[in-house]
Length: 298
Image 1 (cartoon, helix red, strand yellow):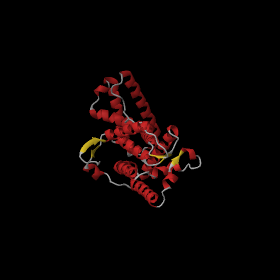
Image 2: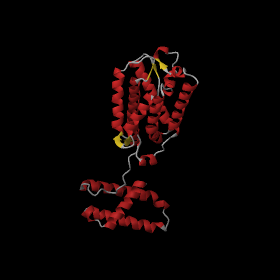
Image 3: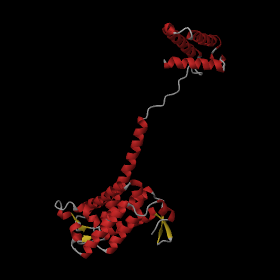
Image 4: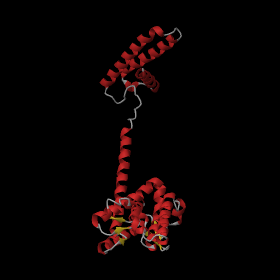
């Protein structure tokens, strides 16, 4: 199986966390099959040994029963892991991988409670589930020739594991088909919670934004005549108050200019009083709005 060439170019084929997880699993397998045949049993999770060997809930996912068991899991991790790590970062992806492994332990404790649990299949199935939830319509080539959607492939593998988990019996070290479903459920819960948390953060950030201030307007042009008259009177009163307050500080040079602007405003206001605001020209409206803006600022 492989992804299209465009996917290979856009995403690194082997990211740091995926590379480290594969390297650890291969190193453990090498030590197990070369020097210490009992290493697998030492790292495996066994419900009957709790609480004494609690740390086996993490170490079991780095040991494997057979070469094919190791190759299948590492190839799936190599195929689906890098894109998730590229999107999330190495630390988040690593914690997610371990979380899915713990999901396998949880299901083993709930539904099996016999034998030992060995292998990274629960964590790898969690990675595949997250990939499908992120990119369900991605295609890969089965046997390098037949295109198939990722969601179809993963769903088929899950159904197959569910059937085998129901009918299979195991003694001693086992692959743990029920534990695979635990990894899937852990991944599903994580992805759903991450999505809902992300949306809630967006809602909070939007809610915390201050409302945009509307630009000040002197007199709304669609107000009824009585309301316009009241606001005009208010502007006139404020204008007179400010003029009386600033009169002593006006210099002889600024007084003529002030009188000119005041006279212009009085003329505009008289025109509004006699003919209505609709009779104002564009220049007169501009004068009225400028004066209103200054009054509001003050």
